[in-house]
Length: 114
Length: 118
Image 1 (cartoon, rainbow over the protein chains, first blue to last red):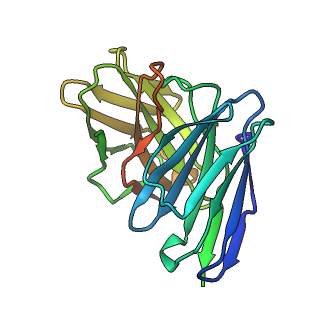
Image 2 (image 1 turned 60 degrees about the vertical axis):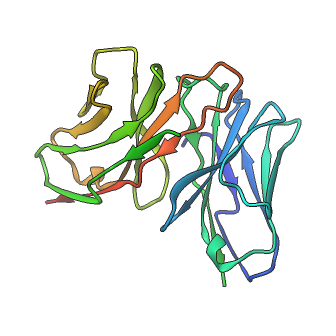
């Protein structure tokens, strides 16, 4: 158990809909990272928050947004969903932002768009 | 931009044997970290081993060890005495040193699927 909790584990929805994925980081971790894992693109970084502030964006679509709340949990919002958004979405957390601080991953949310 | 390449989409090994998974990366940085993550069918991402670029000594964690060749930008994973539970996707990942206000995200390779035959 990594200590990172992601809900829901599986989400099935239709094109055009909006969903929210939730992540609770490990106790004491201030950084939260979101990654998307798809068959064609592999594992790609989406966005990072540190202590409530957005720190970096990767290949995140404009239809996607995220935030980190004062209690440090984070939510990833995906809107106007398309078939290509079907993927496994991981949240990871680390104590800080330094490279030697390991990122611990949650079990992921499997998003299926029908 | 940093890139990570895993040239072996699939590998197989006999139980109790040794297997080596390859990884190369490209960066202009001199200080960084390298990781191997394991993703079993349960889809969890599990940290296997990590290497700090400024350390010449290769990292070892029980049956897992790395061969880090900084000049060649190569970072291979050796699994000794392979077990059935080692069957998984293995991802090589790069992460900058950090501490300069930037995001130190992980950059992943495409992965190598390891099959362990009984």
